[in-house]
Image 1 (tube, helix red, strand yellow):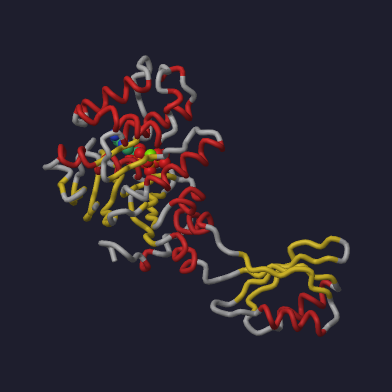
Image 2: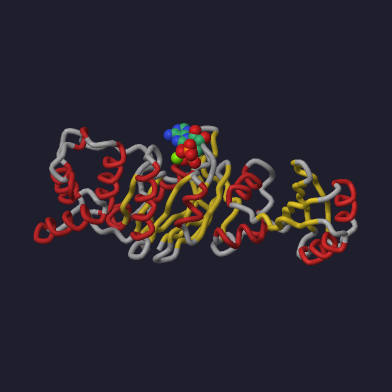
Length: 323
Ligand SMILES: Nc1ncnc2c1ncn2[C@@H]1O[C@H](COP(=O)(O)OP(=O)(O)OP(=O)(O)O)[C@@H](O)[C@H]1O
Ligand SMILES: [Mg+2]
């Protein structure tokens, strides 16, 4: 559906996009993740034919973004980062105007607009002036505008920014629903959004692709070192030194103590499951084990690891043209 090969964009001295390659399959929701200035919007603006690349190649629905931009645009719905709309128009009037421009045939234009308004939950505001709508509703109108010609591919740049928590939840659900019938690229730096919505995630940093995988597999690969959390009742020093002797334990930290209760974090060696040994050690000494759980890594940990520290997953990129 979308193929990007060695894509590069240079603005004067800035390499905004630096040799990026990836593929988005039909029906996939791809999360495009990266910190501020990573090159997300620049990549999306190239894919939607708003700016030309400096190097490399990109095709969308089989059409080249440089040489077949008209065809590309027909197949794409784009919600840009900063939406500017005709704020003195009424919602339905605006959608009619846009549908006309996008070449939606007259005979089913009304039906398409009605369906799109329904999908984006804006039927109830169809006669309102866009400028008077709340930000959340305006965002929905913008989304409806990107959908009105029923494109195969949707590119959404930060679609939930500035919305209240309820609107965020509804918009995410809407994107998930849209993903059933569309190929979607969702640009964001909000990690829970990606975890919730996306089938696959690409992380870029300073213009370079640093990871590409499913959110789950990314977490599995990167989080070899698991942390075991314990809540134990007993003498702190004895417990600590007993735990340190267990095979597979890397390090024992006493997090805090509250009266007799000790909160402990154990760093385990990779691929070890020390839970049973920990349990028996504590029971053997007649201490009391109040809680034990393994901390599962969040995408946030991974994001931090590869965008703030060194890009450690570079060798593990898989599942696309960079593999
Ligand atoms: N038109 C432009 N002229 C010059 N530099 C630009 C232009 N557009 C983007 N850049 C630079 O390219 C880099 C990538 O910007 P881009 O907008 O793609 O980042 P982003 O990942 O979308 O960030 P954000 O999360 O802040 O939206 C930045 O350093 C930015 O300053
Ligand atoms: Mg951006």
